[in-house]
Length: 382
Image (cartoon, rainbow, N blue to C red):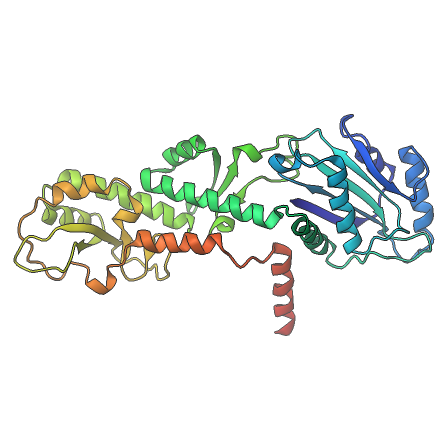
């Protein structure tokens, strides 16, 4: 469930917007308000707010929104109850003025609220400190109490689905154009960003079903690659595509394992071979996988596909591995004992990446607001 809350000084325009929404708005709840007009309600709240002149940003405004597949199943009364209970958790009482309006003009049904932080006795009951994160946590608590998915849980599910589809497409395609096309077939829009120095430098993935054209200018849909996975980088994807292209070309030019390896070396890549079972010099050994690394590469950390000190497993980055291994496996006896991957390094990277994805599906989540707060605290300690 997405949400937002902020303190501000408002005018009657805020009431007009909340009560209109292209003629589809419906006020589902109000408290301590007598007037039926936007201007009248604004004047009532302003009069009460003036009882505490110390508080300039006397209004609390925001919204609560569920994904369409969930929000449309909630009645207006249930939606209003979620918003009201969340507002209570951050200090709104029976003595505060507020109004809640359901909006239906956009794809996601959502509820807007305007609250007077000053109650009828002149007391400010809603603190402004970290109001956005506190309200978000309050909404999550209410959702859990009602057995509804929270915005965090929904985000985790969506990002896991994006990561799974993206890695599948990376393994089956060799370039960004094909990646974008294949992801579109799976229901995702891939937006690439670029700069003069690096070329393609960033990626954002949007679920087509989540796109809301009415609010695109205000709320940017989807997630950046860094939000989807802290392991998979755009530079790694570029390396994978570069390597797969080199493998394809080297395989066409080389009729056997020796020529394939020489061709790859000429393109700037070293090749280690993983055999099925223990390698035995002087006889034919069945190839299971190739591990490839760019010569002189300074990549030192494990990536999503990249394994430190070893490189990329071809079986992990290319779903069409059998078509490459088959002709090269026709090579006869291999006596090169220095170019095979020793048993201690024989863990499949598909297993490794599967583990990473498993960890991702069960994350220790820290909200962005919470993360920013801890970063500020760390800086103050220095």
